[in-house]
Structures are given as C-alpha cells and as structure tokens.
Amino acid sequence: MRKQIGALLLCAALALAGAGCQLAKPEAAGAGQGDRLIGVYITWDYLDTFDMEGYLNDHIGKLSSGGDLVLSEADTAAYSGRIWAEETADGDWVFPGLEGLGCYCPVEETEEGTHIGSHLDEGICSNGLHLTSTDEGDRTEIDCTVYVTASDRACLYCNPVYQTAAGQVYLTGGSGGMSSEGIHDEGELFSTTLSSETSSSVSGQAAKAGSSSVTVRLALMFAPEELVLIQMDEDSRELSRESYVPGRLPEQIRLSKDCAYVLAETHKRDPEGLPVTGRELIELRDGEPTVFTGFYAAENGLCLRQPAELIRP
Image (cartoon, rainbow, N blue to C red):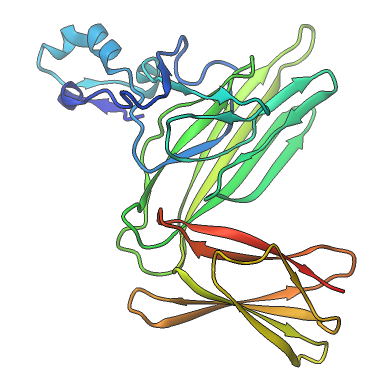
C-alpha cells in the first residue's frame, strides 16, 4: 500500500469495474485479525483494490484545504478492499474473472484434524512447501518461481492471498511489481517475500503464534527449441539419442536396459540469435521414479514445465 497519498488520488479511478470479481470494503483494516497468509496470486496488471470512494468521503474536508495528506499504512489499510475467492465442488478456491496465476495452500479443519490443500496454476513452478510446528507456534513457508521469455508481459504483481478463521479465501492488492524488461541474461532476476504473523489463544493457555511467508521468484529463460535425451551406459558410452519438440514430450519415455544415466540437453537461442545449450545429468536409482522436466514457451510469454517419466525395463 502506498504510504503517501496526495492530489493524485483525486484522479485515480476505481479498478476492477466489471471484472466479474467480488470486491467489498473490509470490516477490519487490511488482513483481518487472525487471517492467515496462505499464498500469492500473481497478476499481469496492478490490482487497485483501494476503496477510493470511501476514502474521499471520509477525507474530503482535508483534501479541499489544498495540502498533502500523508497517511500511515495502518491508516490506509481500512480502505484496502478484498477480492473474494469462490469454492469449487471439489474444495478448491478460485478467483473467477481474474486473470492470473495462483499458488496458495488453503487450510481445512475437519474432525480428523487439519488438512492443507494446494492450488498451483500452470505457469508457477513450486520450489517447495515447508511446515514447522513447535510449542511456540506454527510456521508455513512457500517458495515458487515464474519463468518468462522476452515478451510484452514482462511485469508481474504479487497479491497476497489470505484465509479467514471461518475458512473463506480472499486476496488484497499487492504493491510494486517485478519486471524483466531490458534484461537479456538467463537466470533469476528478482525475488520478493510476503510475510505475516498471527496469534491465537485458548482459555487458560499461553498464546500460540503463527507465521507465514511466500517467496516469489522471477526468472528469465530463452525459449527452448529442441529437447534431446541421451542415454549413457555405465562406461559413459552413448547408447541412443532422441530429439523432442518442446511442449510435445510423451508422458513416459522407455529407456534401454543398459542405460545407467541420461544426459538432457535443451537447445535455445539468445536474443542475438546465438545458440545456447543447457545440460542436465539425470541419475537413475533403483526403485525410485525418475522424471525429466522439459520447458516450452507458451503464447502468454511464460515458460511452462512438462514432465516425462523415464521408465527402466
């Protein structure tokens, strides 16, 4: 949330009009007391969920005096609107009418205990979910990456997703964005971390704290043009070489009985048209599933993952 609001607010327009989303002024400031951060919803455009009409009605007198109005984040939080998610028949939570990518872990309390779900849209690569529980409190850590190619959609905004004590899910507009514009080298460009803390207490017991963090990484990848899997024997001799079109990997790839490991090559071109090859050594372990994950460039400017299971005889 911007901390300084001046005359520019008078020219701002209410966003999301007609977007098909449920936007309402919150009863409490910002994320409600006890609402937990459960993930992030990434959008291409800045979500202005600020309740401009309510703000102007409450501060029109001071604005008309001609001076700048400087508010703290706590002051402006009272006008930060929410976009509510809808629960699907299978228990998932979605934001209909809102274009973006979601990565969040809703919590469901049942008679059998606490269950943590997972919503991961195509286009977000999960790097892991870590849960820590101690006598002092619980901590949830979510880490994810979005891979982009050179495209018009180079700017991403991270909007925190919360869950109320009653189980409802909503998001609030994030501030700032991550952009790949003007950068031409592969690798991680930026990262940002959202975090929140909550506390709860039971009569006669000490308060138990809870904390959550979501780290979002933006990485640039040259568009893959060819995927090559090279089967090698235990003496590092090449057994076979197969080429695949990115985005058209089969679900399963059968290996030779003499294959000891696989070399995976991803052939690309940099912005100047020069060839670039990425290589990965894939070890094969008895009794464990082995998966090769290839990437392909989608029309929306993202690089998406496509897994293929490697099957040994």
